[in-house]
Length: 79
Image (tube, rainbow, N blue to C red):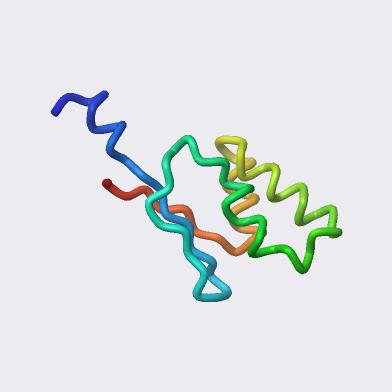
């Protein structure tokens, strides 16, 4: 299996550190904010939560900060 093929077999899983919620085997193309938005429905009017949800779709430091703020762990897994 070459490098490009192996990349296509990677998936992500999201875990909520504050509850038993999890989203398993997500495609790297998944829109993370939409995956977890129902988990934060009680806070839908909080601008900080909304900002963090939007930042989940960004890469790098913005995503890392959003994951930490929301109490989420994003783990790369093999499909």
